[in-house]
Image 1 (tube, rainbow, N blue to C red):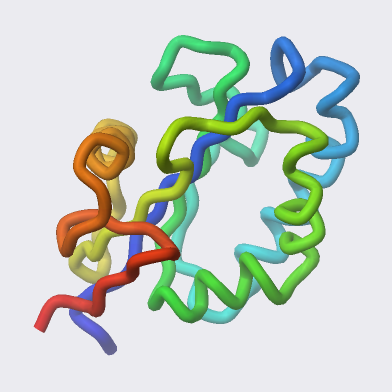
Image 2: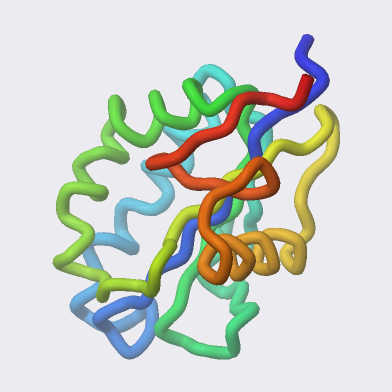
Length: 150
């Protein structure tokens, strides 16, 4: 087993006023399906969730239009496989139907020791760091990835 796993946060600003806005209905109605696929995907380790089994009520930015997702995977490859080669990819292709453009970075990844999970604060701080400083070994995105620490 590897000593490291990949943590990721992604963030989006909804076109709807909140997750219950009618424009968000199709997206919201498919969250459980996408989350079930994630959890049954090879390499899945953990994801942030609330009592409704998703993270839509977790609001670190105090903005009802912003939703986040945080997850942990065995490798970048297993995360990419889930994102781009499952039903999830259909929602990535259609994200402009539900979401506005979000800043310089809407996904951030970083290596964490196996068996650990990122806190909400750590994830938000890493996304903010990436937005301010760009990709580095500390935190990066899919365009500029960094290998596991030696």
